[in-house]
Structure formats: C-alpha cells, structure tokens
Image 1: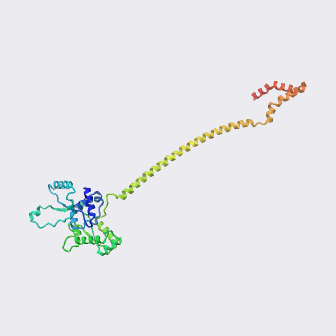
Image 2: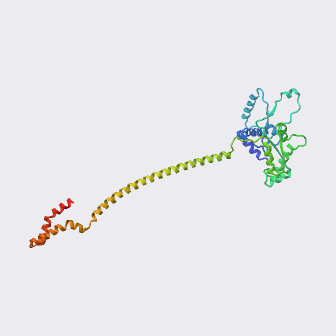
Image 3: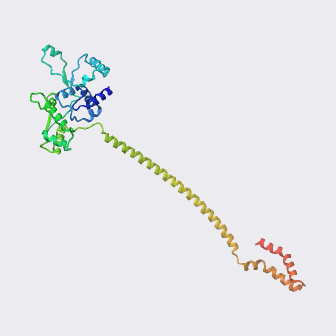
Length: 333
C-alpha cells in the first residue's frame, strides 16, 4: 500500500494542480489526526480541508448500526487486496453528485451521518485578505504560498469556486459553523498587525479555559535527554575526582610513612656517627699522656740507671716487655 501511494504521489507531482483521490486524502489525514500526538497535544489544520466536500468527508462519520462493523471490516480487507489495476481511474478525482430527492421510504434506508467528535477541532479561525495583498505577501517573502504566479492564479480560482461561490454552495467555514457548531473567529489580516491577530486568536482559544498539552514536545525530550546525559557525565567526573583524591591521599600517606622511616634511620645513623666522632675527637696530647708517656718515661729512667752500651736497643726491649701493662690499662678503662 505504501509503494502504491508513493507511485501515485510521484505521478501526480508531475502535473500541477493534481490531487490524490478524496477518499485517500481523507484516510491519510484521519490517521494523522487520530495519532497520540494530535489527540493529546492538539493540532493546527492549515491548507486542508479547502472545500466543503473535503471537510465533510474528513469530519463526518457514519452512524453504526447492527451489522455495519462486519461490513466495514470486509470493505477494508477488499481494499487491501486491490492491486495496481484500476488505479489510473481512481487518480482522477470525481466528486460525487449531490443526492437527488428520494421518497421518504428510501431516505429512511439511507445511512445516517454524524460529526466525528474525536476528530473535529475545538476552535476555528477565518482569516480574510484581499487577493492583491495575498499575492504581495507571498512573492515578497512575507508568507508561504504558491511558487509561481500561475499556481497562485490557479489556487485562488479554486478557493473562490469552493468558498466564494454566488450560487449558494456552502463554504468550508460554513461546514465548521453549521455542522460542527464551532464559533469561527473572523480576522481581517489586512486591517491589523500580526501581533494583534495573534492576541485575538489567543483570547479566542482561551475562552474555554487554559489548555494543557499532556505530551512533552520533542524539544523538551531532547533537552531532558541532554540534561540526563550531562548529569551522568557530571556524576562520572565527580566519581573520578573522588577516586583521584583518594589515590592522592594514599600516595601522600605512603610517602609520609617512608619519609618518617627515612628520618628515623638518619637519626640513628647520625647518633652513631656522633658517638664515633666524639671518641675520635679526643686530644692527642691527652691520649699520649695517658698511654705512652708514663711507660716511655719509665723506660728512659731505666736507661739512665743502667747506662747500657746500646740505649736504643735497651729502650726498645723495655717498651716491648712492658707493652702488656699498657694493654691491661686500656682494657680496664
């Protein structure tokens, strides 16, 4: 079905002014209006429907009676089984002629129609403007519209025939006001500014109270997702920062412990070196007076007494003989 629709759209795009069949246009728009986004957030219809017939096909539904549901299911299945054969005939939109007057008995047998409350809009705005001003706004880039003057002339002619006919043909606005019971807000856009028109539409829409969109917009969802990701990123950064701080504290504690141990070791070495240096720092004279001079003096005294032929040899033998006495004194001390 999607491929068939795509083929139709591409073929109709080659011919300016060509449209999809009314039944297909109605089905596409109805499916969109029944989506959750339109049902819960609202919608704005602009550019469709443009005729009374389009509005009637879109917003009127058949009153179901016993057996109608089964028939509708059979028709839907038949519609799905249709192939590409006969599609060319459907592309040429044929407006059904208005029903002729029928006897009362046949009129009672005709299906009854009612307004589709689930589809019909709550508010309607009828914007009026002179054709010349519309043309000037479009081609000056102030508004969107037909791309060429030929398209503008064609669409303007279609609008006049569908909504400004002098033969009493009902217009699109009359469908909403008469069939749907909407209070249409007329705005002459040539006689007011855009801000004034906006405020008028706002007051008109809030006449039944402020409205609330139950579904969040895509921008809100994207923003919330970005905020959520940013929050997760901040939490990850904070966790990494805490881990880095704890690691830094552990390293600082380990460095302090090693520094204390090194300081203690240095103090012990310094104390030992101080004792050793203190011992080595005794005066040489004191050492000689305590260990050398007494023995040497005694030896010289003996040399004087004995007056040997070789006094040096005598003194050496004396010192060698009394060396044990010097060692005993050192050990005693």
